[in-house]
Picture 1: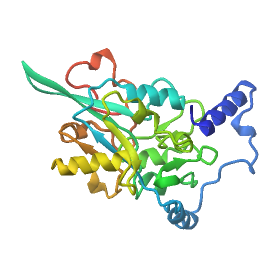
Picture 2: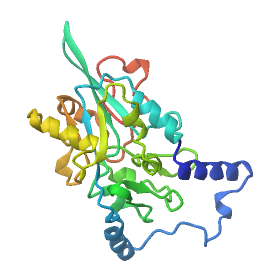
Picture 3: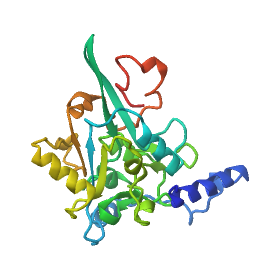
Length: 273
């Protein structure tokens, strides 16, 4: 079940291109107008505040269990109509050790749904806001395709849709949550390495996984916490320390060349695009 809002938006956009409707013919009334600095400052505080629904969605990724099958990416692409060469989530890997004692580590990455989201604050049109459980969402009808959110994201988790020219990122599969279903990646992972749920509910899968890690004295790690974004994703295992340097930074997105055959040896995934 793909995100109906995005799917419908892309259908309308494609139809407009096919019929020869040019962007220059758009009326001023229909155009997306950036907010003034004063409007943006006021608007940010409102959009940064999630609905008072009592939920707090978060993620735990157990990198010890991930074996790099890319099932989470495939299910995400299928669920959300992600075009070739683009990724809402990507598994970044690194070979460690010396022959013959070598291993490949994996780090599944996606939007961190930060509590203090820099993409939200950078958006000039107010298209990014907090949804149910604090999910960071993009309103495609308001996005102007400026890419300021991409420049602000310290995790390279946003890409520009090549058809609609709109910013796209993980939205916690909010359309599935509305139907009491897990995000596609979490329900697909065969290694049970991805946990999602309400952090305010001690009985949720993510809360139980975090409690189990704590009881086993396993450190819960967040990436680039020094950025002050207060990410809602935690990691268990040694992979974050080894692979974090390969995670895209501000102004980058997940690399479309990440899985090229030329990258099957050491050096793969070192940079985003």
